[in-house]
Image 1 (tube, rainbow, N blue to C red):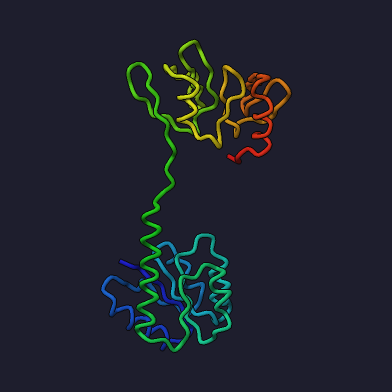
Image 2 (image 1 turned 135 degrees about the horizontal axis):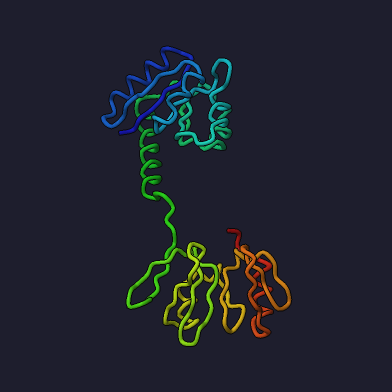
Length: 234
């Protein structure tokens, strides 16, 4: 169901939007407002606003631009001059009055597609890396890994969320295949570090954001410094 809010200072325009919306089975008008301030209590209850631009006290364009997280927006106006500005504030469509039901229906189809795209993206998921430890497969959040230290045939994976490292049977090659290369780099024969956690880098060592100091090996120094100068922002 597409939940909509209509906003227009002309009663006939609001009535027409209501008539058009009633013809679309999966659409519901939650509120019809004659002023922008009347719309505010409903913003978190709707998927889209059909907003006139020339409104009393505050224009529909300024109202939408003032919203931190606005619903989808379709502007409805008698003036073609605002089209460019409408799309600058992220409008899904721009209906020029007087518009037909077919034009309104096409705008609703664009809204429906935009909502489907939002739903398909969903919340951003945390990247995971999987390591074998004590005969179990352990998922680890990539953002939780501070650095990795070699320990004979084993690797110690130091995590921000734990005082004790995760010990795994692995090689540096295997470790680096599981961690994103744009974030982790080998800085020493015995260490791999998360560059986003490095707060200072010297000739022979680096300091992490918790004050931990790690050595930088001669073999890895040049490549590390070049990468560190362009490190990703956490």
